[in-house]
Image 1 (cartoon, rainbow, N blue to C red):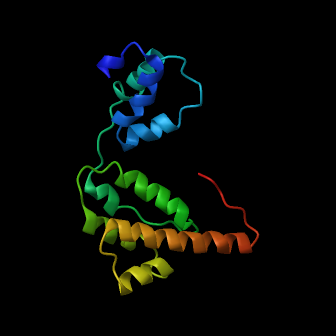
Image 2 (cartoon, rainbow, N blue to C red; image 1 turned 60 degrees about the horizontal axis):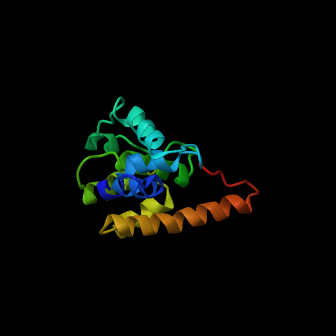
Image 3 (tube, helix red, strand yellow; image 1 turned 90 degrees about the horizontal axis):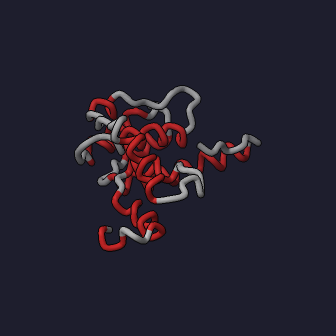
Length: 149
């Protein structure tokens, strides 16, 4: 980036490539055209992340998550992946089991994961997507609107 430091437009485009997941969520949440220069962008970044540094979550944060009564799978997923992305380390097997154990015992996805456990987080995510689509279709069938987080 030092080579292109005079080209602000390029600097703004390259900036996101250096961000981790949590910071990328912040970046994607910025309103379009809310920053007029690279300097404004880096100042906003600094005020959000330098003064309010985010401490990584411990694995126990995942262990304590569970789906609430009446909560949709989509809402639980949002909470779960939000914490998962802030946990430091790679805990594939633990991730699969904590997600499954956080579902109510009667939930179809939990039953499915108990009968045939996912072998990777990617496979877990694929199965979750299938169940989420079924849930959304059922909600639409009952005349309920989908909520967008």
